[in-house]
Length: 124
Image (cartoon, rainbow, N blue to C red):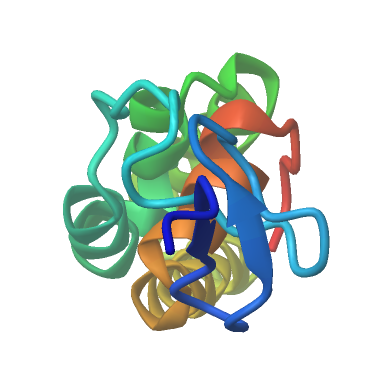
């Protein structure tokens, strides 16, 4: 018998047809009315891991203020790398970028979409 319901791919809770987000876990429902994102978690994660010291992944995700903070810190650290204190700045921004890249890549697609694309979580 057809009930007009689907199941959430993440937690298995029954969802209505056309429902965009699971009410139990918040995951995007496959086949729902959610538009696909133009932001790739793989691209964001790789940008964060390899160019995170300059905040490139933040620009990619549309977080301009944190991106500028990381870019300025990265450039000061890069240009003044012969001094100890600016060298610590580039190391710190690179570590933040690396950690954020790992976090992006370990999130599910639905979590990444909800937290970093639709949401406004600037850091970690």
